[in-house]
Length: 144
Image (cartoon, rainbow, N blue to C red; front, top):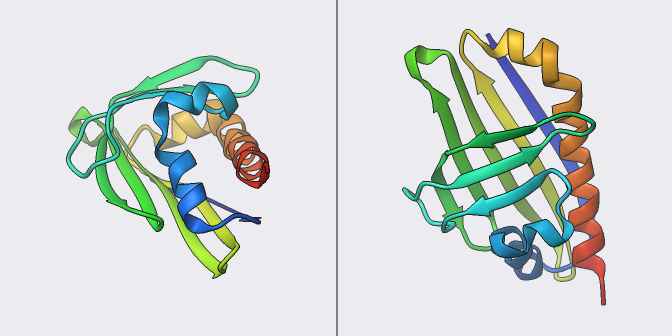
C-alpha cells in the first residue's frame, strides 16, 4: 500500500531564511510543534534522530537517513522498517515565488505493508501535524 501527504503554504520570507530555520535543528523545540527534536546534520548520507509529536497523541521516534540537502531548495530523508514493512520518505521543498517569498511544500511518501494499519490509527493526526508545522514555520519566518 502507498499513501502520500502533500501540503503547501506561502511564506513571505526569502528562501535562505526559510532554509536556515529548517536546518537549525537545535532550535526546533522553540517553534516546531510537530517535529520537536532532530539530532544530526542536514547532509546527504547522515543519520538523524527525530522525535515527532502527534497532535493529541503520542511521541514517535525515528532514525532516518538524509537523502538530499540542497541549500535553499530541498531537504529529504527516509526512514524504514525491515522486510518492507514500512518506508517513509519525508520532504521539505522551497520554491521561490519572488525574492521575498516562497512556496513551502511539505510532505511524505509512505509505502509498505504496514501503511494501512499506521494510517488507520494515526493518519488524521499525522496530516494535522504537517499543517501545524507549516503554520509555525510561516510565523517564525515572517517575524521581523
